[in-house]
Image (tube, rainbow, N blue to C red; front, top):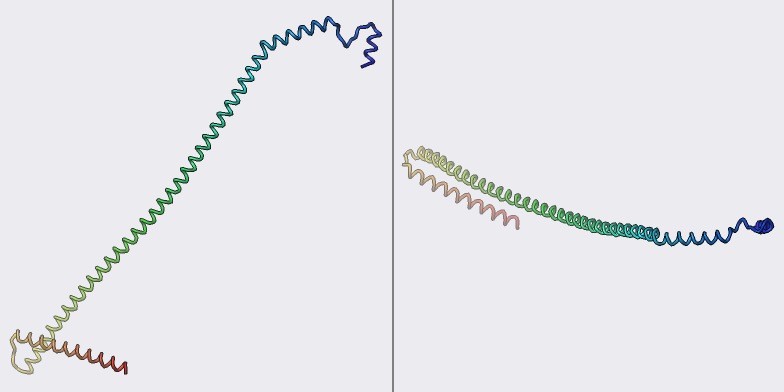
Length: 194
């Protein structure tokens, strides 16, 4: 660079790198006018646009933040509802199980009661059949005994007397059978102990 300066001074005093002073003054004045014009007209608009853009971005950020907060609240509400629904479902299931167990117990109790009634009916029917069979057997035995006695005695008895004799005979047999069974029990009981 020094070589260019030296060369410029030797050629005529005009420096090709440095402009003339009047050009510098006019260039400076034009630059200042342009700067004033830009600062009054363009820079405020640019600043206004930048402010609007910043406000727009900040507004969108705030809106996004609010929407995110709302989404978090909704998510928490859905989670709470889901937990509540799961608890309700579990409660309903437990209640259904308890109801089913109660119904099962009720049905079992009813079935047992019905079975007990049927058993009692059967016992009553068996007792009635047993008593009826004994009465029929008494009649038959009485008839046979009367016929046998008639043949042995050779004399006919009237019907009422026959029935009394038969009943007395059967009662005597019942007493003998009962006392014989008691005696056998006593003998068996004492024999087993001695």
